[in-house]
Length: 299
Image 1 (tube, helix red, strand yellow):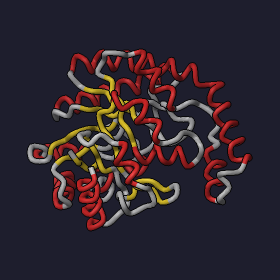
Image 2: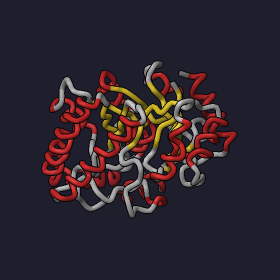
Image 3: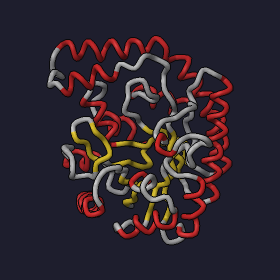
């Protein structure tokens, strides 16, 4: 199945019914509900989900109260927070996303697990990449330095995530939902490559799965964090879905085949029958429709 995320038009089309119509017009009959949707948009699009299958939903959805829709890709609360009140609030809002999923018969809830509270040195990696200095020793040193700082503080955040997942996983089993852990683009975000295995070991035999974001994995490779092919090699047995988007250098969310990613390698790694969701922010209607055909004809 090839679906599209409402990321593409949620901020441009305030009416939920018209939003779904626009995605249908691009040739999609399956949709992922993204974290950009308001409660009003969801209520408006609900009647149309009979003909447009909702395949997955990103947490938090709808956007949190008093959180600007324009800032919906950032999380004000985290499942990894060391502040117990904030972490429990994040769990409560995740439960509401799960309840939304159950109500709309959406089988998969994609989770962002949070982050490690450390000074963000991503700009250093980005600068080295932009100036063409990725192969120099100084670049490797900066990556190592950033990861060292993360490692000093990550254990407590990992424990916080485990507490959150313990509660959410038990509920997912009762609700017959899959919780999908997504790889993230920044080094301080959770999970990094090793943490995915940690969480699966902790919840072996549960409804927890892996959600692979192609663009995030390639972005991590470009800034020296992790080879992109390692994620699927290690976690393919847990894989339940994939977000597909292209990059232009370090800019994400372009339609596949309209950036600089070598999709021949990507499609070789992806199981042919796995759920694929185009997660694009950029691109015209024609480009997105062409991207759907491109992915469909190559997988």
